[in-house]
Length: 237
Image 1 (cartoon, rainbow, N blue to C red):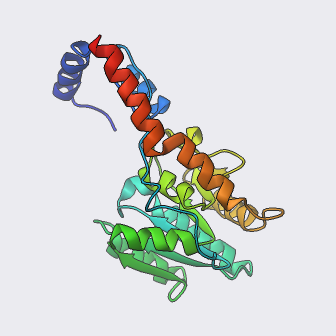
Image 2: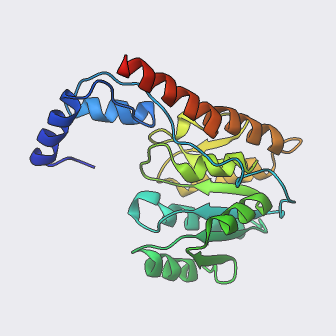
């Protein structure tokens, strides 16, 4: 996204008067600096509710889950094409998509055109507890963004013990590592399909409780609250 001249001027005005700016990822910090805005930064990621998103329940074999607004930034067309590739290659996988947005009709038509009718289900917007339940029961979380920052839904999936396949854009590589998932190339259905297959075939399976514990340590309320309290206290002093 490119800022207009007016928005860039407004950003420079606001950031120039801030004692400290707290971007949610280092990628966002670099993006702000690329707009010619330089100030004091400290990265503090988004927070996850670890009382709601918990690792409990049995994964359904081959069940993929995607959650988010259905618009161009999230790159759902690449995910649908990847699922179609895998099914043509004999993979018995299903995809649940939770969320709504301006591209839902287009994605529904694309799923039909790719022969995915009955294998991809669009659930629309559901309450957070329902999202958490689906995360506990899925085999794999998938996020195929064109661009992104520090996606809350990704750390919610990890707090649920759900391994992820996600595209290596924005702040996502700061969240996903070898113990919690696999990164794929953005806008590349073949790379996404290969990452999904590798994740489903992961030797020995994924340590879902370990993924959840790591997410709670890095993104839980206690840790993020502690960091914010320390930063606010330091700035106030």
